[in-house]
Structure formats: structure tokens, C-alpha cells
Image (tube, rainbow, N blue to C red; front, side):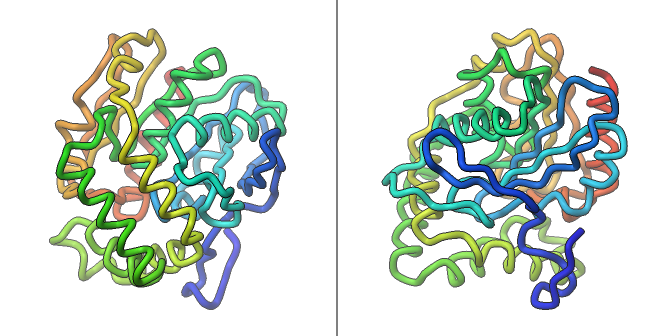
Length: 282
């Protein structure tokens, strides 16, 4: 992956290309490009105040057997931050469809982390004919609770008053398993650096979109596609029971014992193997 002195040898985004899609949004993305003779790609969607760099520890392993695409969501990483007041999950889903169009990718396996999981579900709802499978990584089909909605309002207020860096400094440590936080210092620092490049408007509009997202449990229960659900046993943001709250007859449930909310940083080899196994099964 691309190296960068500021982030201790890691980039704040691994996107190496951009596409301007039909709605005028410029989206950056990582693309491993090699198809391996398959007619589909694996798409990895990052979480809130993250970027494609969240997947840097596992993309090479996954790209050894399938084309991997990892976009920077609108308002995040190297992508543009459009003026819409609310970035609904539907907007993100349509953005993804635009990226796939730009890359001439007809079908994909879409796996999303946290916010990325909400987007994956919206994509399955709106563009289901383009999916071979989908899944959630530390995410949930459930809507925000009243308490979570109130926290979104607090996030917006914090972003408006103190800016992105202060908000990210408070957010990132909460995403890691508490008992391993001290030993994950470099990863925590890296995730903060990734978060710092999130556009202030993008972070605010995304928080508003997550607050108003719909319950998409039926997208899973009503689907005949393979579904991967990955939870962290020590996740203090989205507990396993929320990740596993909806299943279908083709669901694979995985609980990673060492993970909080950031398995792609906390136990990357285990997450990569679970994803690779899921891809091989399709």
C-alpha cells in the first residue's frame, strides 16, 4: 500500500483513481483491477470518518483471488463532499452504482463496515440485481434508537463547534476493544489520521443520514442471496445481537473474539480469512 510519513508509514486513503459519476460527484476508489477470470468484483465499504485505507491490511490478500474495489465515500477520504444537507444511505448506494458503472462492473459482492453496512443494505434494496452477495461488518440492519439519534445530534453539534479533528480524536478510541486499546496505539493513531481528512460538511451530512436511515431488516430476511454478518465480541458500538438481528437461509454469522468495532485493524488476518472463505463459497 501507499506509504506516507505523516501517518507513520500508512496512507490516509489507498484510492488511486477517481470517477465523476452521473450526479457530478467525484469519487475516489482503490481498484486491484485483476479480474482473475471472474465476472464479479468484491466491493469493500468503509465506516464513518474512515476511508478506503481502513482495508489496507487485507486488500492484498483478498485481491489475490478476486478483483477488489474500495471507494472513499462521498465526504470522506479523497472523494468530494457535495452540498446536500443530508447524505441519505440511498445517495451513498447510488454513488456506488455510479462507480461500478464507471468501472464496467456488472455484479459485485458488497461488504460494508459500520456506515458501509448501512450503505450495502441500501444498495441491496435499490440495486439488488447487481449483487452476487452482500454483508455487514460491525454493522446492523436496525435503525437508530432514540438514544442513538440523540447522539447523532451531539455529533453534529460537536463537528460544527469544534471541527473534524477534535471530533475524530474523541470517536476513534471508542471503536477499539477496551482491553486491547493500549496495545493498538499505532492503529488508533492511523485511524485518527484517516479521519482527519473527512470533510466537515461530509461528516455532518453523513451523521444526519445515519440518524434518519430506515430499518432494513427485511432486505436480509427477504433476500435469497448469500449474506455475511461479522460481529466483534467486544464491540462497544454495535453489539453482536444487533449485527445478527436479521438473517436468511443463506446467512453466515461470524463473531471475532478479539475484535471491538475495528476488526480490519484489530485482527486483520482473521477478518481477511473469513471474507476470503465467504467469497470462495459463492
